[in-house]
Length: 281
Image (cartoon, one colour):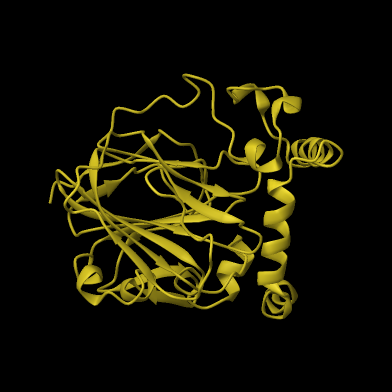
């Protein structure tokens, strides 16, 4: 594990990411179909869940990777909050004042995660968090955990470390160091934040209301405000997607959510399953 983490510091991560982005978007008839077939076999992708199960129907790897699911593949649980993605639980629980648990020996602040906005971060002091890792084989669209209105979005430039479990255990402040998109919502029970964290070879992050957020990678924080608009989502609506896999981090204020008692760190989750209910206290 130590060697794999050291590699993360030495690899030309941006060059690899640019190259992966070009490969993934290529619509070459000689290349894309072979890559898609190889990937599906290697990672055991269940194409029977896909709206279009025929691998030959995808013109590019990106089209395949962000494939839609067939109707009814992810029914929504009867819960106040549903899981927004397919993946695995990296960590979840209580925010200790402003500190989020990443892995043994590693914590990072809510302020760092949201790009330095201390006023926004303060709303989540002693609140709750959930960090969900999407592996290469997972479905890579991101959905809303509850009904909510979009308030603003911030693109925060950063590193492009891998976000796999080994790297999370070895790189301090990983999710607050990597490139990320911070989405702020208002639900009936209060505000919450949903953060899309980029990683090595993640070609781009995109949202349903904006499109690709990190197309230019200028190295500057960018912010979009939507408070004067009515951009509304229902529970289960798609809100974004990763072009190659990564991680989602959610922040909730104190007392807003009580997590599903069956959730455990490293446990598998599926979009639409019960994530939690409104906290009683």
